[in-house]
Image 1 (cartoon, rainbow, N blue to C red):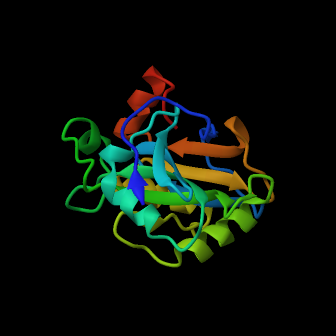
Image 2 (cartoon, rainbow, N blue to C red):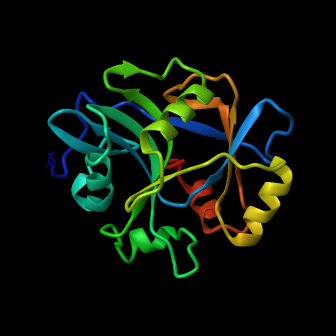
Length: 210
């Protein structure tokens, strides 16, 4: 399967869902919570011809992330559209954004996949988040080089957020159970940022990533 080079947005682009920032993660049974990883937002589109990795603004960065592209190419399906975050980790396994920007560690970056928007021609965006997550897990089955599964957190959101901050991770994303996938800014996805994370300053200065 071929891999396309860097080029601007095209008709295959689907604008990603962007979480709304909140001071504290929501509590209660109506939410699914995941770690928020500090990297580049990518949607990975595979069809019968090739794999494309598109940025939040629709630019093709496939050639920068060949390990991720190869992992998507190896999935057992005819086509898919996966939403995730491309990260590069330090020696402690913590995603560090500057490793991508300053050190340009694109070749070793991996994608934390957290949503599945299309599979074998079926548009899943109208399905509840729980259905999409199960379909994603069924497709990926296990972590592999270049492609990891972002699993829901099995703990109270406030407790999980405290531990996430202690570990030096970016924060937590909370997704309302039963919600459909919405392109653009959404209130069914909420993000709570670690106040000590380097990402906080970037998020306050510009709104080009989630």
